[in-house]
Length: 373
Image (cartoon, rainbow, N blue to C red; front, side, top):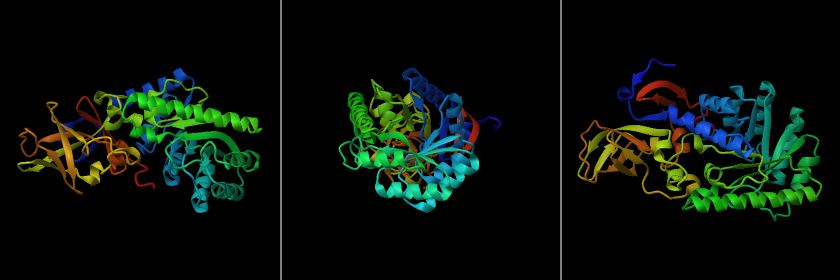
């Protein structure tokens, strides 16, 4: 813990985490999971930070979810006891590194498969490592990214192969309704969440009728978890963005600006008749308009003055941000707090998170899995 220092004295641009909002977001999601009788395995691709994962685990999360092998290895080395890699691993070299890391630290490892090629890589890797690996079959519930659709003729054979192979353990079904980020309202997100549950229930029943037990059904996506009215048949949730939030859940009516825990503090370094130029460009804010390529918001972030006046970041170059002046007459040197469109890629651009409480810096946390691609 650092000796508190005024936030007004830190150099910019800086990635700021409001500790109190962060802790409240973590506690609220754990309470939601506990109240619905589902396990929480948060996705750490949002924060990539060991300290935040430790806060999530301390609140009751049973493990974490990662995207990439190198990202997972950071948290395995940090002592997380159970890790799901929710990304198809088809490179045997990557799988070997992951299995070695999990074995060295005594970590429960779970992966996903959605193809015969992925299953072959997994079985060869588990045989080489002399271990049994837990595997989910991923189901595509509408994003059209990874996973098998419920009517794919390969779904049952793949699940059966995972179930019957001596070097793999069939964990169940996993999905990600990421297309919910493109929705226009809370009601639309809730409908997507309901459809996800229905699809997974049908697939589960189909597998069980085929003699394949389905121990777990795992879903992810912060919007669908927050908007869902029913968790029927679901055993686990894997939200990630909820720790910070950003403009997208606010746009969807799933959160308020007062709950957003991540922001970027930037300084006006120049100005002209049209724009205030800030020291945060695409290398800080990213050029992301929303998760999964959605473009549900205008501009590249909302900028707030100390008095609460709201401006918009309308253009970016690599090192500069263009804030539309409107009627604002802010002098050079003014600091602005920017709420990004999508917190996940923004964090991946930073070396550290500056943790604040009541306007003072109370910690600096390393983004330990930054660039773990």
